[in-house]
Image 1: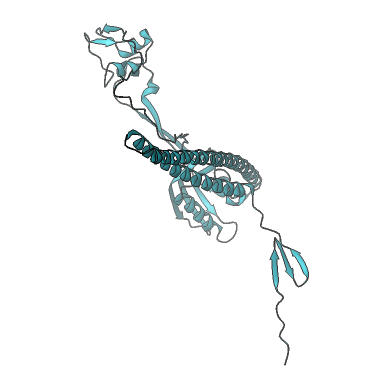
Image 2 (image 1 turned 30 degrees about the vertical axis):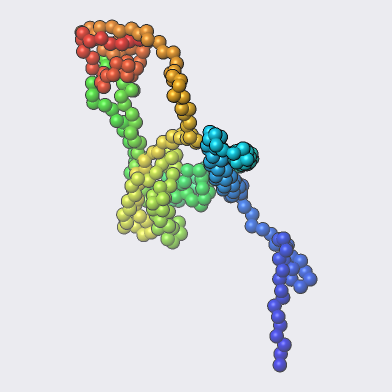
Length: 347
């Protein structure tokens, strides 16, 4: 009866695997800088949230202990032993709150540091990716091919040169800019820029998706459709060159040519706004009942004029160095229309 051969047992110890008496080095999977920075930031963010939650809990208990101590202290019938016990409990919670606050602040500093590093390495990787894509587009345009020379790719270069969709133009590329401008009458001589605002910017293109290999035109369409569905921020590079575009409309129709489809795309330009947030609760000190709250010194001196026929807010703003909006605010005006004979505060 033939002997059964057992499979050699394998042990893995700190990145090394042992088969029988032979050691083999196992190479760990490499991670790029952005992945490492993301993991570090997520870890720091979790630690900060945990520390902040602990601090809030301890702070709440400290406030509760302080209220209990003050209540006992205000009662003349409270025994000294009970008062001392309440005071000791409050001081213990206060000490724990101070320690918890330090831990939270350290966790916050680590979180902020990890966030800054993530931003730095992400910007560095985006720059490197965009440089690779620019080089790939340049090389692509040097040679003739049926794919065309218009290019669409994710802003920031995610995915590298393999994530670029090339296609050939059918009609001219077009750009449209529109603004919202008020139709209401405005002060004569007032800057018109105060009554207008850019509403949208769109780019429209028509092109052919063609195959270099079998089925690649369909793959390109699927990629475009995925970017549209996920609202991916894109860059378009043709005769028109814009970053920060979203696909607002995507259409296709099949032509009579083999492995080719016609695609029309409408891009909408998105503007980035910096949003700042403030954390923490605003505390307002309550004034004692026996004291009068003083708001501070306020000058009661101001100048009023009588409006003459033909005068406008713009004219008074130029004469007295005040803006039209300020004049409307202090005079409680809902519009820029003023009536002759009425008083108007100008200073």
